[in-house]
Length: 130
Ligand SMILES: [Zn+2]
Ligand SMILES: [Zn+2]
Ligand SMILES: [Zn+2]
Image 1 (cartoon, protein in one colour):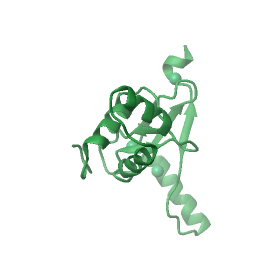
Image 2: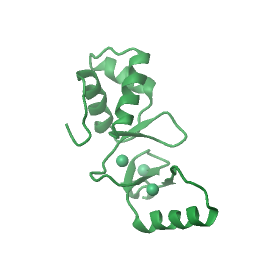
Image 3: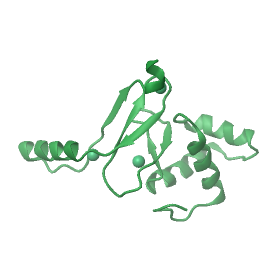
Image 4: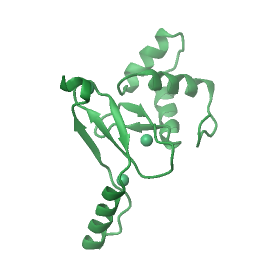
């Protein structure tokens, strides 16, 4: 398993592979029926539990404001974000030092003890622009 692999059960691996093969984020219901079509029976509760475990390990991310998940492509332990296509759902991750520095400036200006940030860009991917 990749970095931060932890303990990955057979069921979790099947779930992860399905998500990694998909060109767009998938929701729990959809995952459950896709698994079933591949002969893997997983009840709703187990789908949610396994997704939480994979999210916790950093192998998946939830699309902001949705229950759909997508795989993590970042190899380094650093803050990174995604830009998600609002038409086909494909996502790309990026890291920006300039962005993180700008957020540091906001933290200093507001004097808040910032515990995290949620940021996701939306737009049209190259293919959907054509
Ligand atoms: Zn990621
Ligand atoms: Zn960040
Ligand atoms: Zn697209």
